Image (tube, rainbow, N blue to C red; front, side, top):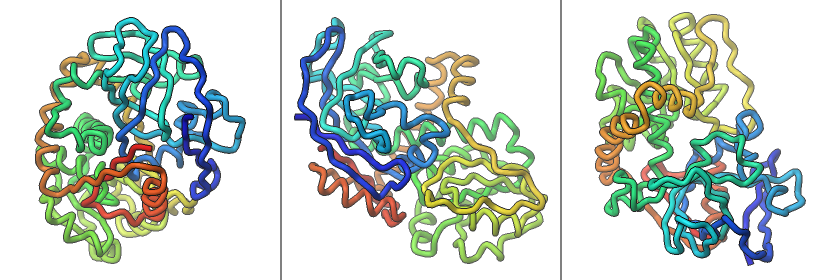
Length: 362
């Protein structure tokens, strides 16, 4: 019996647990036991922009035999283990890493098989973005270090976005900014972005966070200055300023536009963890928010650099970042849906501690 967790697409606090009998595995497919997988604010963003960008389509319950059209499956990043195979070249026992639904198991149809991994070729996923449709054989990828096994599902997808934000800003000469303000500075994607930007020098990095997280954010050493949301009115306004927004909080954005006005040269919208329908910021002057879609920047760079060079450049930042995380991130591992649902509701309320990373297996 397979178990999967569904989320109401218009009310993320409404959760359903569905049990399904398993059918025979189809020819050319593999059955994968899912876990451990990570749960971060990034997953809330996937749901908040799920219709706009298409994240709900990857594991649409209707495509997997669940007739609940108002529900969706929130995608997560994590490991899977092949427990049954009818696909030549993918053996039972193989560990893979990639995009999964929150479930006990899933059947995948490997296509475009290489020594490094494959893509899922089930019909409804064929036209979806390859980055989210690819699965890596962890033993074949040198960036999967056994010493970092618990950190990888939590940080790897977030840091990939961080690396691409940094590259995007550098590619545009920081849009002329003299300082960059990162909103929700304690989030793991924000920390990775600050870590990468810090290596370049040239612009001042300001982390904007809640009072309770200031000490933690300062302890990472990734920002030149850390400021509370309550102190936005005290920020220096004489510099050309770019924003990198990990939370999508309209009220905070509005206060920043009021403070900086025409000196906001770019507003990079990355996340939407503040998902409960804030009004967009009132903009009388300054650059309007612009959505950042990491796969587009990745595609551009892979076409320009080639896949191997892209991996080399990201790895040069990724492994040192993981080493740094050993000092500021504690990983907790849980089994069963009760712990998962408790953690999910805490995350949904924005109350997760920034120095914790959480892994789950149903």
